[in-house]
Image (tube, rainbow, N blue to C red):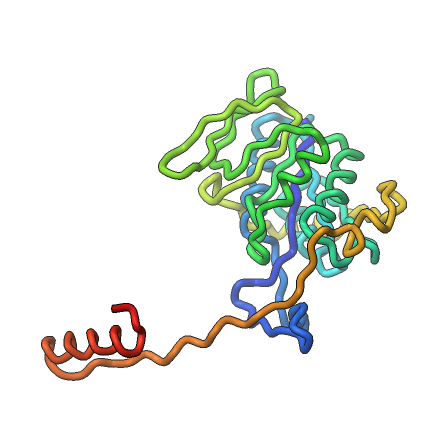
Length: 265
């Protein structure tokens, strides 16, 4: 089985985000980028499936973006992935979820994956659109927000558990298919020192516009149906107020604050 894993490079949640002067992007200087949290579950699941299915199974991670995401691809290789593909081209810049999905779908089609895994959403834009769009471009079945995967005895089907409001849903999926992974599916492993050393020597294949057979007007900002008009910073939270006095006085003051300042009563 050929398993592909889509990974994304996102700002670390501990990084302090600053807006650019025109408020249409963020300042990249000083921002640490890491593998998207939900994509870690996807990589781990692919590796566990490889361990169960045997040596004939391969895991390839692929991603679209600037040079900085090479570190994320190397992290996946250090965890145990067999190969990595970096989709990079100036024409890809500024793409929305659908334009990016078109590039990712072309790369997946060229690799001929039987199963494609990815995180349920990116923790940066939280759109949760890309995997579904890739599935549509490829004409593949899909199951989203999955918390358990079982491979059928003939390796041509899956039984997956997906999280829905108020419970779980069991779905039978015929391969090839795309699965988005949710927290709870597994516990991602740490890369071992030997794995890190091996990852440094592994070649990362780079593919651009011409290799994928796409035109510049199909991808990036030119091929996007949406665009970012601007970002707005979150309003600063007011300082914490400590209530003094006994319980009765504190309760009275709290009610006053809720009514007159917070205006929720």
